[in-house]
Image (tube, rainbow, N blue to C red; front, side, top):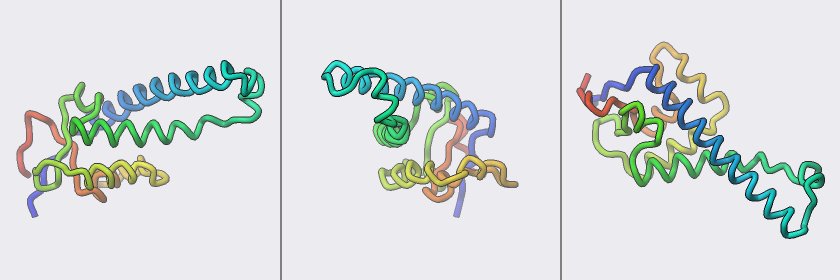
Length: 142
C-alpha cells in the first residue's frame, strides 16, 4: 500500500490552533444567542441561566458540525486553508463522506491529541479514518 507523506507537525499544530480559535468564536456567539433568546423570551432571567442551564455541552456540537461540514463541503478547514494543507486518503485519492465522518467522530476519543506524541506522529483521527493532512503543493508519494 502506498502512502502519502503527511504535513509537518508544525502545520498540524497551527491547523489545530486556528480551527480551535474559530470553533471557540462560533461557540461563544451560539452560547450568547441561546442565552439572550432564553432571557428575552422570559423563560429565565440572567441569574437563572447560570444556575439552571449548563450550555457548555454545545461546544461538542459546534466542534462536530465545524469539522463535518467544512471537510465534507470543502475538503478542508480554515486552519488547513491558511497553512496550505489539505485532506486526502492514505492512497492519495479524494476523501469520501465516510472518511470524514469517521475522522470527525474519532476527534472525541479521550486523549486523542496525545496520539501525536507517538514515535510516528499520526493522530488517531487520521489513522482510523485512513486519511492524511498533506501539503497542497507537495502531494508526493513516500
